[in-house]
Image 1 (cartoon, rainbow, N blue to C red):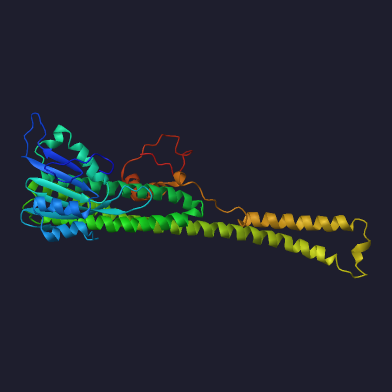
Image 2: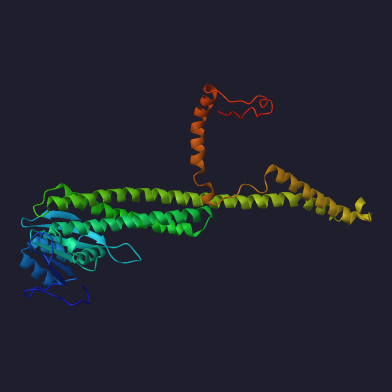
Length: 374
């Protein structure tokens, strides 16, 4: 790995090399085989390793010239699987090509930089229980399975983030639009990655490759099924993000309507008061009320009565103080509970008609007609 001591055997230029079995006490070894993990090798090293293991020219070119395709191919003495796994970047989704050469007694992996799935499986091979019957094909299957589990974890994290966005959307947080757009792009990118991974694992599980045994195919098939479920959940994520965006738009529209309603009510209350002030503000000489001693207080009082009357009228009509958005946790599940109650209502009514009712003598006259006790 980058920065670590380079090790090799027989002048073989490799970054990491493991030979099995390694003192597996009490375990049945699968046979002697070698795993060579090459990280960020230059073309000279790749060609040297390919020559030592007998890889053909086309397989070597696949390593030297990475592509976006994910596929598996049989080359007689070995099987080549090209996967694209998530890089270890924490800020964005990015894939790194992993070229896996599986033979009967060797496993060679090439990747340009460190991969969490490969590193985890490499560390686990130091445990004795992992070396029980392990072979190159099963280690390859483990790598693909661990990579699938990481896709599932990211999909679950996306769903949790959407739950947070739902609460923010109800409150009309303006940052929701940017977050939804970002998550939608991540979901589409991850869905493409998972579909590619699903096609590769499905190919390895369905087709017969001499270098991949039955147990390895079973594990790869499990990874393929999990990849399909993750892809389906990502489809649901897109729908959920669309629903969050619609919720945010509805919330913003509701708040805008509230503002417009307040402004309209305010204008409706002030308008007649402005009319009174305008009438007595005209510059006509013969306005009868101008000579009244209490004319000013009468006009102000009239405006106050008009404003209060309109305010009371609008309040009684519900124009002021409409429904308020409540926290989601208070109403969550209430719709389902109401639905269950409605579905059991006919059965309860039928039971009230069929089963006898226990009534206390003398209590019937005072009992509520709707209080039927079985």
